[in-house]
Length: 198
Image: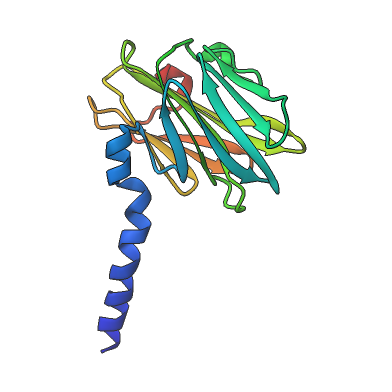
């Protein structure tokens, strides 16, 4: 009898654990290439409101520029503009591409405060890039810069603290996992340097 209860509990937990990894009906409708965001929009223009660090923000995309502003403020911070990534450290390694955007939020750090995700896909180079940005000490800072190009790479998946990209040609998985305020890289094919994916 005890085994039956344990199996019932495990069966109930599996769907909720897998939910972020499975493409939902809204993901299919929106044609998103980032699976597992808590809230997002897709396209070449749009906006999204969210709360982090006890403050309400609105992120907007217009003419290739992503801007975030505190609600009620007329001034914002430009986070992305056709490859110009103001708060990022490793911009020199990221290709300048312009394509379809997915912009959303997800709590990578597990502290209940969501991070902002800006992702871009360009079919001409068959790749995905994603920036994870955190509001910290009153300013926006990059805590993760992720990119993989070639080999028909077309999407990335988020689950809890990790973001994963699959190489459909080889089956290799590339995973960046958040630890504190940085992301560690691991690859199933033994790749050690994520810049080799650019």
